[in-house]
Length: 251
Figure 1 (cartoon, rainbow, N blue to C red):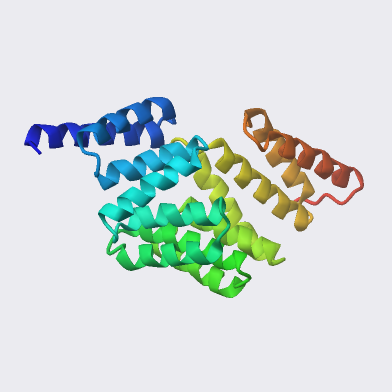
Figure 2 (cartoon, rainbow, N blue to C red):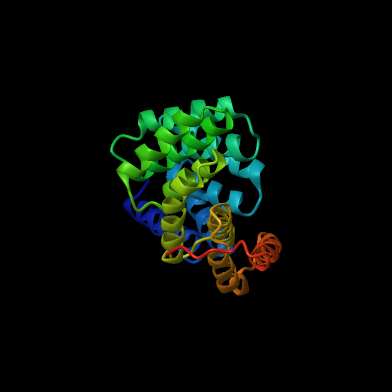
């Protein structure tokens, strides 16, 4: 491959990643990454980005094919293993297979802190699904040790603690996740709405219903995704709690 072609592929990959990750323009990103792959069909970075774009467009089978191809090219490709593990966990719900992939991703991540944090978060979620709660918490805490400002790690730890009926311990992590998601360049609607609902539910569990009302009323007008109806329902339920006199404001 000539140096010019390598240069062109690198530019196309950078453009596609920016369009996908920073601007959320999936169609244009897919066009760019397909051009890169026509020039270099076995470029693992391009295959991973294409898989992420396809996954975001609910084309899961095609996304999985991209990850499989990347792993066939490089069996130690930690990002491809991580993304394939994510599909096994979130879509196929085969937690043991997901765990094998994420452990390989951690093994081959080297000094890549981003991959390590994401892999630890995913491993924690998988372990939690397997009812290994304490091991899951250890994974989330390790992720936060690597990057205390990682929104996913804070959110994952907060959600796990809340599910374990520890809302007081969950609250600081959920509040931090909410602050962090507000400063992300292009968070998905799913991520925003999930973060809001988790924090509101923690407020309610602790009796801080008025704080939950303020949070929901402030953010509901901007909600556009799948969770809008749930947030509306949660707001209605929370207002009923306040009307019953159960609403408290944290000092």
